[in-house]
Amino acid sequence: MIKNFIFDVDGTLLDSNEFHAQAWVQAFDAYGKKISFDRLRRCMGKGADHLLPEFLDHKEIKEFGKDLDKLSGEIFKRKYLSKVRPFPKVRALFKKIRQSGAHIALASSSDANEVKKYEIIARIQDLVEHTTSADDANRSKPSPDIFHAAMRCLHQPRRDSILVVGDSPFDAIAAKNAKLAAIGVLCGGFSQKALKTSGYRQVYEDPDDLLKNLDFILNGSLE
Image (cartoon, rainbow, N blue to C red; front, top):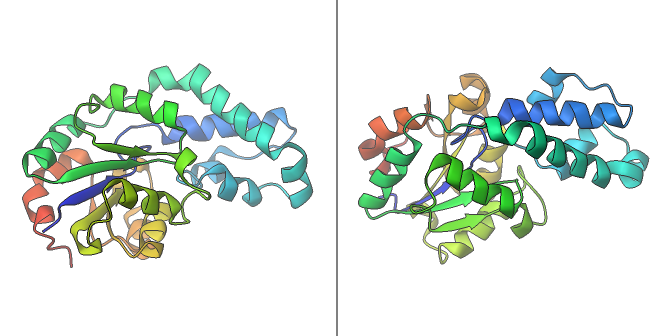
């Protein structure tokens, strides 16, 4: 039986991936780097520590990587955060999970303040027991640090009682690195093939689809 859920946030619970990608495009552009939206869109799910090396050399990262990352966050909050909406049935899904007796932790590459705002947008702040953010991890996904932090918040339950839910290949890789099972959702914009090959046990459409299949998921019948 699954007794603990660790949820990614961007692209899994909230329709925000494209907004983050747009903010990155504009931040790179401000530093004279013309990076296409499509290239950055494919990196959503990675934190800056993994994303920046895809587009900058070591010297550039040292010179302005932190400032570029900060600017991206500022652009997102100023221009796009107010436009972010939850996917359908997020609150209903979380409510049913809690009614089953299972526990919920959030694991996001965003900063702690942003995660708190996300909880409010998704109307789940009263249903989430634990949150972890970029502030709790040395390295972002696909490194496993954030999931290790979430496990500590959940008081280190048995790994076979934990299920990670994410939308990107990087969530699945991070879960695998943490020796955790994971299921994926397509609403974050990655293809079913990309999600399946990255290691998800099952792939669903969105939180509404998770809700419809929750009894099956709780039983751990994912193979």
